[in-house]
Length: 345
Image (cartoon, rainbow, N blue to C red; front, side, top):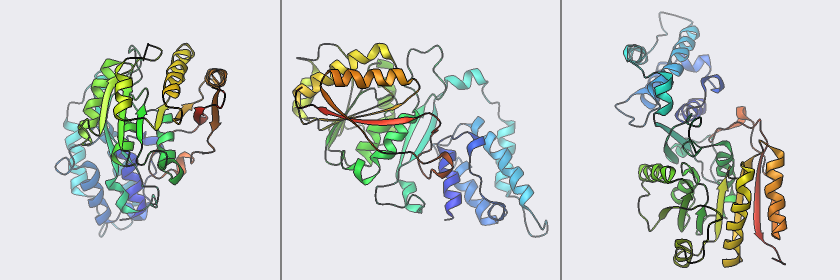
């Protein structure tokens, strides 16, 4: 299949804002087979039970049909797909939820995850996906940001999908802190061959939603993935964490976008210290979007004060226009740190 159609489909299933979609070229859009493929793979509810919400479908389908219409050179030979036109009519006739109601609704978001040794333009990677139910805009008025997947998680996911990153996960016992939607835990368990994953968050509601996402991805077996509430800074000695660590001694800890709150940093570092004291060979991989340079440096300095060894990973994201699988904004600096027990810790 044409790589430009595959790229368009991956962006669409990840609910990339229409203004940032890379639209297929005109010569492809006027092709009847290409139009048929677009309908079958992106809009046909009979073939796809995890499509984007209807409001988003409408925001993509209307400009798509406009582009197809503009691509037609010979009206005698070139036509617009009846299936696409009929689907547009159906969407226009549907009573869509209000913007306020849509914010509260869960929507399917599907991420494409190429294997470390695969060309991201190849067709077969489209079977390597993580599908989540997210509430993409539910932040205001909520006590948590854990109902959507943020840029730092996608950046860390991109790194873990490289040969160097995947080596930190393959055949390892993994603990995720502040898992949110569970994207990284699911990626590790489903596609990166982790031996076992323990996925945690400090919010009970987020953990319940996380369990639903595990089920969506066929990971509801606790022998493969365990979910639990973990609040940083609390006394962990004698807690379930010690029991879990005895059953599945952690090799790698991951966390993304968990350093944005300066008030929570001391509790996070205390938890990391406890885990490193228990498992001196542990590797901790933390990714963050540097929204506030002072906050990120506060975390780094707190780690150094605890005599952790802190190393920044040299991994730069592709620009938005060059991304082929996981799509995320790169305007804000994104950093990945690897933290280990220091020699004098």
